[in-house]
Amino acid sequence: MSKQKQTVLVVDDSAIWRRGIGDELSKGGFNVVFAQDGQSALEAVKQATPDLITLDVNMPGLDGFETCILLRTRLAPPGEVLTRQASIPIIMVTADDTLKGRERGFEVGATEFIVKPFPAGELLNRVNRLLRPTRLLEGETVLIVDDSEIARTVLRGVLTNQGATVLEAEDGLGGLAMVNEYGPSLTLIIVDYLMPGINGLTFAEKIRENPGLKDIPLVMLSGVSERDVILRMFKAGITDYLVKPFLKEELLARLEIHLRASQMGKELRRKVDELETLHRIKDEFLAVTSHDVRTPLQSILGYCELLANPKTQENKKGEFLNYIRDSGKHLAHLLDELAGLSHSLDLNNAQNLSKVSLTDMASRSVEGMHQLAKLKHLRLELEFPEGGDALVKADPNILLRIFNNLISNSIKFTPSGGLVAVKVTPMGDGHICASVTDTGIGFPESLLNGLFDKKTRASRLGTQGERGTGLGLSIVKTLMEKLNGSIQLESREGHGTTVTLTFKSTP
Image 1 (cartoon, rainbow, N blue to C red):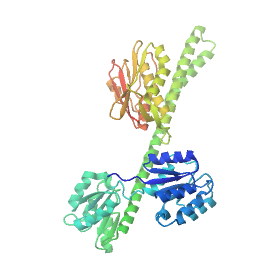
Image 2: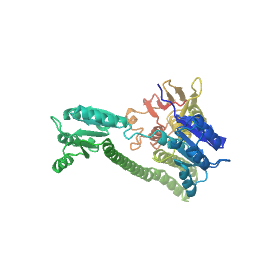
Image 3: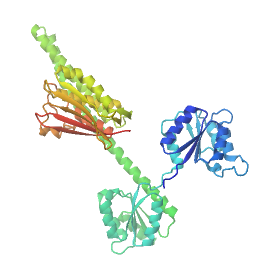
């Protein structure tokens, strides 16, 4: 039987705000009822007790403060009083946030305040925190190693009640086998001190020998409290110990401390990795800028010197101007690629993720590239999916950049008279594919492995001598990863190339 939805009463004199709050909470899985003023709210809670109330402060008649007082304290005729009124969480919603107003709100019984206008999702987060509190060990995996079935049963009950997935072993050897099987997926290990065969101390020492397990919290249970024994436990590598018998609250308090410390350690390592990535990006930019930008710039400066030289023949000046123009175009293209690299690798780059038509974005790109294909006498075709549009969750600017990059690449490497075909295909398994196929020169096998690598920067001249940076496909790969998509490339030298993008479809 499915669990009944929790109900939230939304009290606001603004129909727009009632609708906006209601939509957000409904999408979050709550049943929503409405009241347009304080009096209506009082009547609503007599009919059915909500699990939570959002209460606008500034309303005509009874304002939010007065309504809150009556919700908390007013007595109704016998049989109409709802005994849960006094404990219903009430979130005060206000557009005029002041310290005095908050003090007044908490005095009359408000649980929390939220200030209009608030970002999408913020109110839902508050409601979830109050009505669906996360259990301490939700999503965590804990291993219990204890020879006592009674002890394991008690610990299992406490841990599963807090949301943990519990694995069990009745001795040290079994515990080590569990560790070998589940390894880093374990969040925490609880081990008994006195066990037949491998005892808790030996078990702890063997665990800490594995570098991949050195940060997993290891709590030891013991019936002894001698200082020398406890010292030996810590030398063996335990994180903490509990003396039997212990209270459930004591166990959970200790586990919470160690889990938070472990999570903070993981977050710190993630930040270090992020900083190292940013440092590497900086080095890549410096390397590309110092080398690649200098080459066309020096070419421009050199031909400018020749043009300024009075000894330069007149019939050569047009040729030199063409060289300057080509070098300038290459420099502009390079700077555009560097800007794309910066955008795609910015770890803090906020994306405007929304429902986007893959067909529309492909059409816009094909339209924009039509003239470029025409100049090389290429056919540029687009095939739409049958039976409607193809929607994905993406940043439209990023999606357009991906298509532009792939189509311009195909145009560059396809000789005159060839074909570049763009196709959007729903796969029927919750995914949509978009492919760009050309009849171009293809890539030799020796270059394929480096096409997506920024460090390798595999590049070659186009069919009309067009130069590239070697960054294009690596940028596309990074952008696709940002959109939670994937990219595949198939190519044979002399037989063309197909690049396939795979996205999750959005209803």
